Image (cartoon, rainbow, N blue to C red; front, top):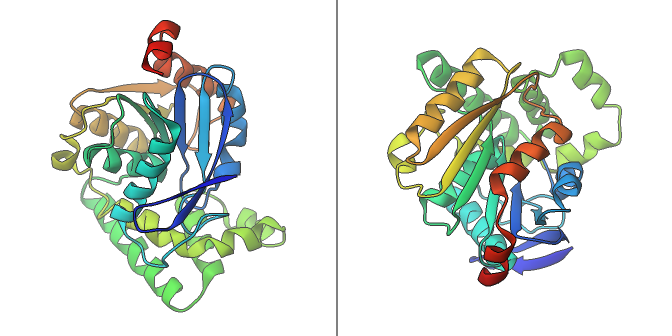
Length: 267
């Protein structure tokens, strides 16, 4: 993997593949660049796809302190390395990061996100507050496994499935990244969609959800799309929070497609 220094000097590791207009993929909680390998491979015939390890994960460095501004700077550094005309896709909380970066002035014209896990509404805000408090307690106590289990339960993973995962080699990798769950938690604030801040997003933005995702998740994506000045919404029939790459890739390809001549001129 290549590396670039973020604004605070933290090294951020990234991988580039394919040929065409640059497209950066931003992973969600606990993910690393390799998590997006299947989606990146499907997009690579049309785009130069850049995947990266968010700070505190994989081969990237860390300061050990959650700060949305630092992650925004990380993404800005990766986009800068990708080159002019870069588009961005964010998965789950990676979508929240992409939106925060765009609101802060990240120079992208096209942006897509898949189910940023905002929880608007009174019950959603209470749920988020309880999860935040429990996550903070677990991390303060050094209970990385408990923090991972909390995240899995929040994403709908059954207890018996989590118990089986504990017996696999991947569990140690998840525990090693557990402290970064605080970073994703910070990205989501109190769970409400920050419509005022996102009014500054100038990019044309596609907000995507799965047709089989929960009703609150689908409703939140529609509210998000309406809050964005150039937002539009799309539902992928039959998909859940864990969307199939082979279903998502054609949608992203259609949205991010550039005229070949225009790309060559921009380059």
